[in-house]
Amino acid sequence: MSVKKFLLKNFIRDDEAFHLARVTIHSRHDLSLHRHNYAEIFWVENGNGTHLINGCKIMLEPGHLVMIRPDDQHTFTSARGGLTLMNLAFPLDTLQYLRSRYFAGSDSFFWTRDLVPYQTLLAVSSIRRISQRAEEVLQNRKSNFYLDHLLLFIFRLLFDNDDLSPDQKIPAWLNHAIRVFCSPALFKQGVQGFAGLAERNIDHVNRTVQRTLHKTLTDLVTELRMNFASKQLSITNTPIKTICNDCGFTNLGHFYKTFKQVYQQTPSAYRKSSQTIV
Image (cartoon, rainbow, N blue to C red; front, side):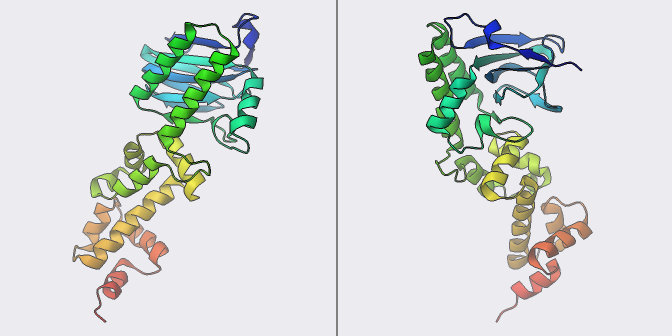
């Protein structure tokens, strides 16, 4: 499949610093697979669809915001009713300026080395704020001043949303999800349930967990399940089979194997030792 290369100069006039537009995609034929010589941010306002990016398929819904690097190859398909998004395209020298000024050494946002570019799922209210600010920018000349104004607004909102400190400590939303992910109903949903608590897509949650906790989302969910199991074994007489089910395991043998990998003893031995009065 041939990949077109879009050039920023084809979308802006000589006196403009960026391209900003709202677009509704109605089918897979609206936009061909392409890469470009500029940086791009897009956010989904309405509808659903699929983002075909570097050979991967990612479902899009209102709230998604994605940062596209120049060499990313992507296009879109839409569900019935179309997919409405706004996109901001700007020169690479602005991207280089942002990196040197604010993101030196960063491996997030436009500078992630992951196959899939940076993406996050924001509250729809946050997307409305970005769109409102973008519409205000459209009322003015498309200069570097208004480009920087919009970009810094977006980055500020993302930092506030993730509650990240400069040294990339654990975001508040991740701490919240870890604290709240402690019930059988959520354990049975697994990583999907955890991502639902975080109000973010699984890929974003997994990348954040790996970056901040140095483990996968699956490992974290297993750890939280086993922590719940150990407490139940220590302070209750609930049958082990029930605890297994409450932790979201459908196979007792798998539960025993996983528990032993974490605590170096079987659930029954753990219960016996933890309930022994010394």
